[in-house]
Image (tube, rainbow, N blue to C red; front, top):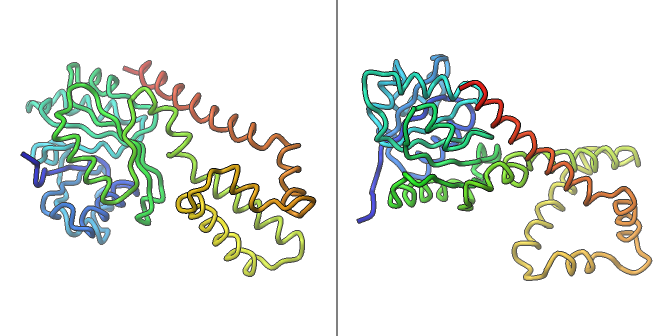
Length: 278
């Protein structure tokens, strides 16, 4: 049988938590009274979206009321929060835990509990704030398959999702979690370049943004491979080839690969740093 609704609590009420909650409620994927929130900073309870959900006095109250526990916390504080739950007089090992933190593995969360618990690991990105996000999802062996499908259904209602093996989750950050910043930087470089050529920023910006949107749409919908799309824009002896030759001489593709690798290396370092503090 499929699961209709599960109660979910958010430990942490920051931007990502707010974006997920807003998506779930606005798209009617989950009734607002099925959502519980706990944050140390009670000022966050005053936001518009938090006015429609259950804001709790303690983490234990939020977790007790829920089936799913989304750890919307920074990697550096997850271990303390989970250890607090594991040390509670209540047994929370039967809950399914969802992590959105970079570099925090399901094994790490189990170690914090001191026992095996069901963990779904996700990597969302910040465009989720606008309902335009992408989320990579994995799970450990203790997650019920029906529960995993349910969680995937929730995330797919508010974002593009990809289910991957957990062994890929540190690497996927370079593809998904951090990658919006690459696009922002490319946009800024193009805008600065336009201004340097005497084009006003307010004239160049909408053209650059639409070119980025249009190029993405061509990749998605044209049915052509990337090399063909590049060739279609690149007339022999023309302007595009002149630009692409500069990218090639600067080692553009290698720079991108090196940047992505640095992202993955840092995620693995963060994982080791978290482990060392257990």
